[in-house]
Amino acid sequence: MGYVLQGVIGSAASLRPGRGFANAVKVPLVQELYLLPMTANLFDEVRRGEAVDPRFAQCQLFPPGFDAVLAGWSMQGAACRLWL
Image 1 (cartoon, one colour):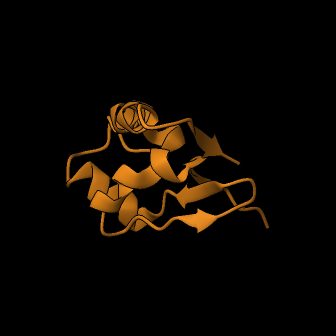
Image 2: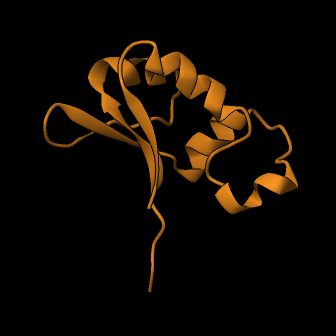
C-alpha cells in the first residue's frame, strides 16, 4: 500500500503566513525546518469552494492558484513544494 505526501517545507518564517488558514498545521522537522502538509481540509480552505481545473487532477492536493500563495510565503524565506 502506497501513500502520497504533499505539502510545503520551509523555515518558520516562510511558513508563518500559513497561520491565516485554520487547517494549516506546521510539523517540526530537523535543521529548523517545518512541514506543512496539504491535507484535504487545507486544500478546501485554500481553494475557497472554487472548482478544480481538470488539468490539475494529477496534483489534486495543490489547489489552483496555490503557487501564488507559495510565492508570497517565499518572500519571508526559502520554501519548497513537496510531492512524495
